[in-house]
Structures are given as C-alpha cells and as structure tokens.
Image 1: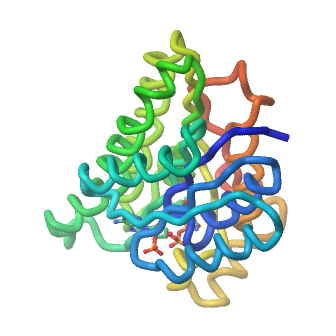
Image 2: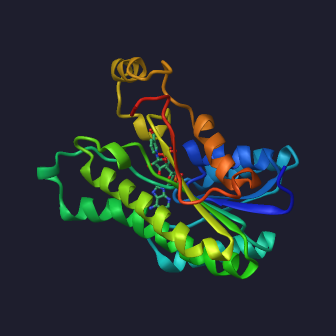
Length: 246
Ligand code: NAP
C-alpha cells in the first residue's frame, strides 16, 4: 500500500489509463484522472472511485499544449499537495501507408506521444527533484521496439518514448526520480476497435499466452513501476504482450 502518494494518469478517461487509475487507487494512491475530450467518462471514473472511499479528481487538458499541461499539473498539486507518480499514457493510433502519410499526420502522432510526454514530465519534475523522490511511467508499445507495417509514425513515436525513458532515467536518477516504460502488446481497448473479430482471433492465436491483453494486465505493470517495489529499477522497458513480440 502506498500511503499519501498521488499519481497523475494521462488518458485515464478510457482504456489502459482508466484501468491504471483504478488499480493505483486500490493500492493506496490518490489519483488525478486526466481526460481530453471525454470529461463525462473521467468524472464517472472519479465518482466510482470516490464511492469506494478512494481519493480522486478529474482534470482536462490537451497534452499538445504546454500551457494546458502546466495548468493540469497545478490543479493536481493544488488538490492533493504533490504529484509523486506521473503515468504518461494518453495516445492515439492510426494506420496508413508510409507513402500516403501527410506531414500533418506525422506531426500529430509526435505531438501527442512525444511532445505531450516531454511537456508532462517537464511539468512534474521540478517538484519531484526538489523532494528527492518521484516516478515517471511512460507507455510505449511493442511497435516501438519491433516496428509495425502501416504504422511507421506510431512506431517511431513509441520508439522515441523509449529513448526518452532511457535518457531521462540517467539524468534524474541522482535526484531520486525513477523513469521506466511499459510496452504493451495488443490490448482490448477502443484503440483496436478498427480490427474485426477474425483479425483479433488471429492475433490471439499468434500470442503464446493465447489471448489478447486487457487494460488490467497492463495496469499491473504500471503499478509495479509506480510503487516502492521498483525503487532500484530505472530506465527499463517492461513488455506486457503475452509473449507476442518474442
Ligand atoms: P484509448 O482507449 O484509445 O484511450 C486513449 C486516451 O488518450 C484517452 O483517454 C484520450 O482522452 C487520450 N487522448 C487522446 N488524444 C489526446 C490528446 N491530444 N491530449 C490528451 N489526451 C488525449 O487508448 P489505450 O488503448 O488505452 O492506449 C493507452 C496507451 O497505451 C497509448 O499511449 C497507446 O499508444 C498505448 N498502447 C495501446 C495498445 C493497445 O493495443 N490498446 C498497445 C500498445 C500501446 P479522451 O478519451 O478524454 O479524449
């Protein structure tokens, strides 16, 4: 149990982020539930947590905006006093042939995954460094390590998230801040809603553990990096993919 610790989870209105917010709350964390467009879903998550006696608040922000990110972090710090854990989870996915990709589509992918990651971590780090303690958990993807056809921009952005993790971990380790990364495989969320049932069954069949992942599966890996159990671990990438990527 983590007592008097606060975790800010980006993209917690749905999917993996919501499952992470739930699990972190169940393990004693106060939770800042970030949303972008789904305010109602984020508030519903907060109400459901509060009804069970957990401490939570919702805050909206477009993570591509430096000003909105600063306001989001200020709101979390004002409500709970401090932010001990940042989970950089919010993201988008898109499928497109590389040769058809527009500059705007390329930039959009990097804006949310790379610029957003930078802005959020930059906003929470000064206070973490001053306290000599903090955890940043970045969400990459197996495609960031092995690459996906028709998802070059997504794969490149997710590889950048791994690069950020490894470099920032070294930079802030002397200040007591750990930076780690979870690389999920195929996880049943809105992000894979474009896949038909046949494709999902084939992907499950190609997964050594015989099924697709759930948001709760990934949340367990996030909890590990958020908690004191990983205090001597930094700069690492933990794959949660049922053995899919090998
Ligand atoms: P999801 O269900 O589609 O949810 C995406 C979340 O990101 C939502 O909470 C959304 O907020 C937020 N978001 C989107 N654009 C945003 C923006 N411009 N600013 C702020 N927030 C924004 O996705 P998921 O499957 O849970 O994915 C979570 C993370 O895991 C992502 O980084 C994704 O790349 C990664 N991942 C997913 C899979 C998978 O198979 N699902 C596999 C590997 C990695 P609103 O709903 O409030 O708009």
